[in-house]
Amino acid sequence: MSLALLLSCLFVLVYTVFVPFENKLKINKAGPILVMAMLCWAIYGFYEGEKVVKPHLMHHLADVAGIIFFLWGALSIVELVSAYKGFDGITQLIRTDNEHTLLWRACLTTFFMAAVIDNVTATVVMYYMLRDILKDSEKLKFMTGMAVISANAGGTWSPLGEVTSTMLWAGGQVDIQNLVMRMFLPSLLHVLVPLWILSMRKNTVLNLVPVAKSEATSHNYVNPKHTRIMTIVGLGALLFVPIFKYFTHLPPYAGMAMAWGMVWFVSELLNNQMDEANREEFTVAAAVKKVEQTGLWFFFGILLAVGCLQSAGVLKEVGKYLETNLHSMEIIIFVIGLSSAIIDNVPLVAAVQGMYTLTEFPTNHFVWIYLSYCAGTGGSILIIGSAAGVAVQEKAGIEFGWFARKVGWLALIGYTVGAIAYLLLTWYVYPYTLDLFLK
Image (cartoon, rainbow, N blue to C red; front, side):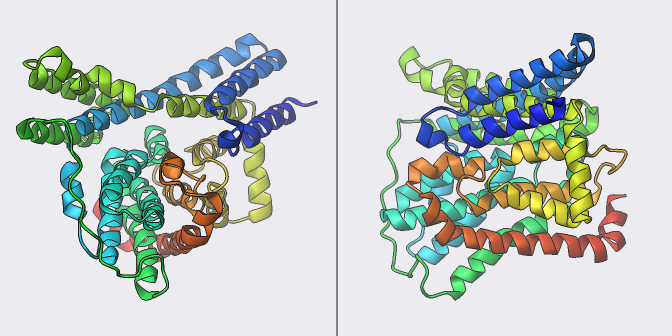
């Protein structure tokens, strides 16, 4: 059996068994994926020899470790801000006695929040906010599903908002100015179109019955001054990361390390006067424990496995096959986005990064920014298609079929409208307006 075929079969077999059916098998997908990744490199080494394979492994390990460290730092900062109740004010901001107004406020808030604190965290935070406001489980499920769409869309136009956007930014395929300016409108349309459809329909899950306002959730006491300081410092630190990269040209994880250090330092100053029992939940150690470590290990394994497929030349062959059969990059990327509803978008984006070089498609080429949109929002079509959906699926009790019937079709319409909008803007508007501004 050829090396390419063996590696492809191993990757597809492990991925299709242990990722989609993780809940049924009751086996965390991170473990099998890590085993598969190392087996791929071992087989590659057996075929090609240590001297050939080891430099490739070290190269991919450096790139993957940088992305994982960046994500770990960002999630840790968000957890620390959350510990200081930094997101409680948003709950009061979206609270209303009208369900349609609540839906619009929740979705738009999630959209912008995801661009700063990442789509997964934004979805989980919004779920907890909605749970405090809505007591009807069916309506809570529906609004949580719409929050998934909004978070994934919000994450596509920010290097902080979605793993795949971070990967493309860290890989040099896009820069921040182009990602934000070119992606914002298509991403926003991905949210506004489903919201507009729901507003026009009278037989939606939402039926304009007033929502009974609930009392604010009780929390352990936090000094309001400390809450304000940590919220400003934490979110400011996240926004500082791309600025640091712009001026220093250092990798994103370098800025995140500095941001994490600043937040850590401020946190120690705020809680060093508390007694040990009360300060524990406000410490860095407590925040780090709350970070979803298994998700990071899953990304680590997937990215290393895809790196092996790239080094072995498998991805190049896949790219040639797609070009031969689909011909158009517009169609290829659109189909890849639809595939992300079934296959996690992280390996898909990593695969495309391995298929095409920056020589073929330079930084900010329409293919890379289009890929950011399609891979980031296509996963909203199914509840298992994005990390944000998986994160709240069990919490909100959202079934696979229910999501497809009630929410998935809205995500598909929004996805298509946003994709068409991006292509039209790229063909007819940006060459005469935005490109001049960016230069």
